[in-house]
Length: 277
Picture 1 (cartoon, one colour):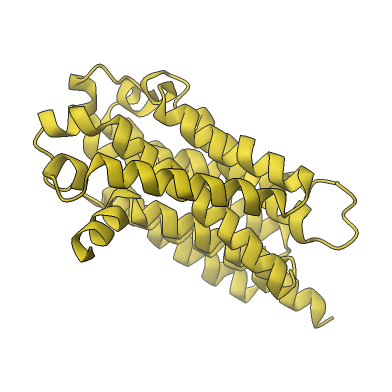
Picture 2: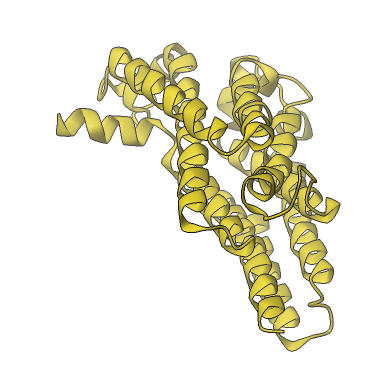
């Protein structure tokens, strides 16, 4: 039982799953969501990410076995396909129910914009030049989902455009860095997404620029330009961008996660400052 649970946890792509769920939680805090509504948002996003992660490993299982990927539980035999499929079905049901509990606008946007984009990527978009589109749509939709689900009196209106732009920039940057360690293996299997076509050098140069642009847009939008804390945020963002540009292995993607959390924290800071007058 313990082995199965551990295998399932490792198969769900825990890093991105936890990171996106944390982003949703920070957005709930920034938008002053009530505790019950925040819990529902976090549950919907968390289960949606489980669906994306587990479906990815199921679809890639044969290829991962061929490549001898010991870091993949399905390929290594640490968890069965039946266990992952069962967990995927359970997560999918919970995702639909919790998404619709947010209201039809937020629920449909989450199921289509985030979960649908992730599944589209897994099912083949990742092998095309448009591989960045699901990430841009998903991350760009996340602020809107939380806004629609939590903002009092939003009446179905969307958040400021800059929030969705920041999300899209973060998503594309994260996609480029997430694909970076597997570029050679993916290309050998005929997967030619945007980062594969750009090549490792250009991919690792472009991604940090997109991530840093997201931080700058958020900082300027909330009035941090020229302030002491704004310069501190920019310095931290630049440091993370440098890590993304020069790091190896998982370090660039972890830096991308750090920049995403930094950007969401800016929204929380902005909301607390506004509440304090």
